[in-house]
Length: 465
Image (cartoon, rainbow, N blue to C red; front, side, top):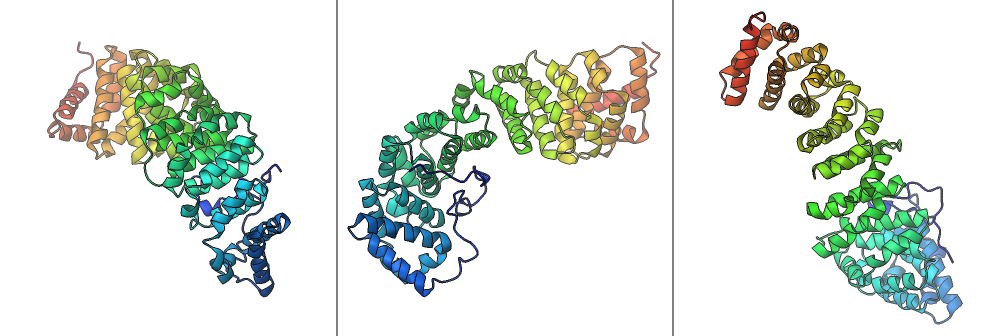
């Protein structure tokens, strides 16, 4: 019997912050409307009969008992869990189910019952932590018919029980996942991704070797066209304690960066923001990754969907630009083109303090890294006026420093009298003059020196050489 989840239930991959017991994508989702209602007399009789059948010797009776207990739990798990009949058999049930599961006669029914049971209660985790991993792994080794529901069962316990997780590693369960993933349908692939996510989300820390085992499977998640799986893979990556060389090992062939850049055109804004965040982190590795992002037109694709009113997108994108401008030796055309395409002035005029800091940092880096002609194209008179306005209102040492560097760089990079005259006209502002005077006598010597130099320029007769 092939176990299939209903195609209409979404999302198939859980929201990463959703509680486990609220994440049941299967058709036997427990009813919420009746969860506080106790079992009626007929249901109690059914429950008593179900346990009698489960602990009997007749195959048909056993199967009938399993199905009855499963249906009762689906309809009203809370009532079954609190019922005295269930409590009398509570401690015996796990061993009985494991014994029956090993006979391979009732595999599909028992797995469905386990999925309902473990989705709604962590109480049984310790009773299953030692024997269930081997039992489930044996089923996977003999047939792929039940993989989807087995992975569903595993995701519940592995997210709550570190012994269960350790036992899965011990029996090499995770070694089987790459092959299963390649051969699986979309639903099962997404469930495998969820199992890996729940593995790293679980309690306690993983050993370095366990982390490497999970890491080695990330490329298959990050190179798929399925956006749910890509998001899952990125979330897993964020939770692993890894060295840069470990991360580089899955990036160096370029396949992951290629797929992430392709994902920027998915239309899924949640995925896009997640991808930008990781492109920024990966760019921090250095020129190798920056070149890959450039080859796959990462910044161009971001510019086409860039929202100047989305704070998270702005900050993450400018973090990427900052890493790019800091670490790239020669590949500066992409950042220049990006900054020219977006409405930088609008962002500065409408962004909050957090946005102002990250954008000014990038503009400062650009003023230092770009060639003279590019600087004066990027920092137009209109943008310069906006920078002056922000400088006058700034009360943050870091912002003062960034703006002083921008102004000082613009003044020192050109000897053109026309440009100097235009700059001087914009900088000749009483409030700006007073602000520069205060900075010139301030404690920050570097900023004070730049402020003094800018003041000297403002007061200078431009016609003098």
